[in-house]
Amino acid sequence: MLLDRESECREVDDLLEAGRRGRGGALVISGVGGVGKTALLDYALDQSADYVSVRTAGVETETHISFSALSDLLRPLLDHIDELPVRQSGALCGALGLSAPEDSDPLTLCCSVLGLLERAAVTHPVLAVIDDAHLIDARSAETLRFVARRLKDHRIVTLFAARDGEDTRLGEGGIRRLPLEGLGPEAARELLCASVDTPSPTVVTSLIRAAGGNPLALSEYATRVSHDRLRGAEPMDAPPAPGPRITEYFSRGARRLPEDSRWALVVAAASDADEPGMALEEFEQLGIASSAFDAAEAEGLVRVDGTRLEWCHPLVAAAVYHEATSSERRAAHRTIAEARAIAEADEVRCPPKQALHLAVAGLEPDEEVAHVLERAAGDALHSGAIPAAVGLGEVAARLTPDDGNRARRLVEAAEAAALVGRRPLAERLLEDAASISDQRTRLEAARIRKSLSEELLASVTELTVQELKVARLVAQGATNREAGEALFLSARTIEFHLGHIYRKLGLRSRTELARSFASKAPEPADSPPSRRS
Figure 1: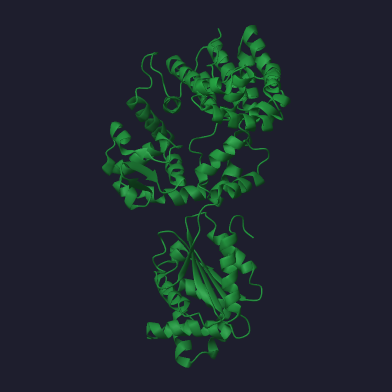
Figure 2: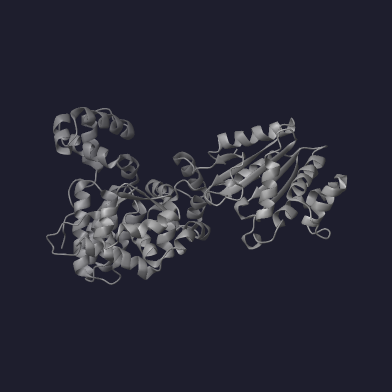
């Protein structure tokens, strides 16, 4: 059974069983590229050992050659061609290039193909599989469509696989459709983790969201993303770069766009990879008119829902972003950063996601930019957005020209990484800091490294950010009401979180919680990292 395809497999099984009983039929399996259409066809072939199976696939370079797909599909059955009436066998031989073409009407040819399948199904049921049916030539599609609608009294099953929006040659014509969607979260996690050792849960969640449940994209991520990034030791691209096949499919429509529309998509992809929708007003502030997305909407790449722009699939954003040149990507981030006035005076408080645009747009060390990013990291840490603080802090350090400040910022980023359980990244940042810093910073790095005990990571970092905040306040003696007021939560919600905290840490009381945090908790999560000199 295919992963997360139980109902689809049952539908194929039912159709095959009906074919065995002389109640055949046809099915069009549809979906975006990489969603698993071919895998479902393979499943059908595996379940049909008692069938005579024939298979073909559409080829883009042969779409102009009449009957090319039909010729491939029927070749194994040509021993039965002499069993057909003379007129039908002549029409079929002429169409398949086995004799001089005959001036026969289309109905005769269609009946000859149905008749050939009927003759082959006398001893065993017949399964005809057509992959990439959106690419088969028009005459083959016309003939197979005719046959597919006339199988209910035969031991013949026909399965087509076609991409969404590209299967017009099959038409509606009464052929039942089976749309394939992306895998659910649990199945996607299982597929991704099957080929990756000890991946970071945060990274896994990010990749699943980026892939939209697409099995091929998940498989490519598992092999293309570096081991350190999968473990959380290296920062992940946002959006993550898909593999070449996924990029080819999801960016194809963008290549046909006018330049202003393609640029608008690049900016949209760079704007906010984590947001499900973006306000058109934001793009107008970037100098991009809403009409720039009209062509992209016509291509099925985006849709405009009222005043918001949404990607038809998250992989469209990833493909468009990574097919753009590196200079185009930097220019897009620079456009966003400048429009939002990120790099103004020091007094400006820079939201973490906006600050990242400034980071990506810059290549050279720049203390002004690094300082803005450091402050944004502190704000993110103070608000509980610790993963964002990690990324911002690391980039701030990388863009710092002075060794002393760079080492200090690396240590602070390591603290934040340790707080969310990203031990490999924290270790690497501390090693980098120790290699360039003075004795005082090396001692501070050693202190943090000591706090990265396996016991701490196995307990405290099991908590969510919200649970960690609640645990710290309660461990410091706050009542449910006091903790709730500090976190803008009700006392009842605090009690709910405490139940989860006790269970995750194996504790039974506030006293045990206070004792646990007093002995091994890192510095409070709701305070910005200290500014060491």
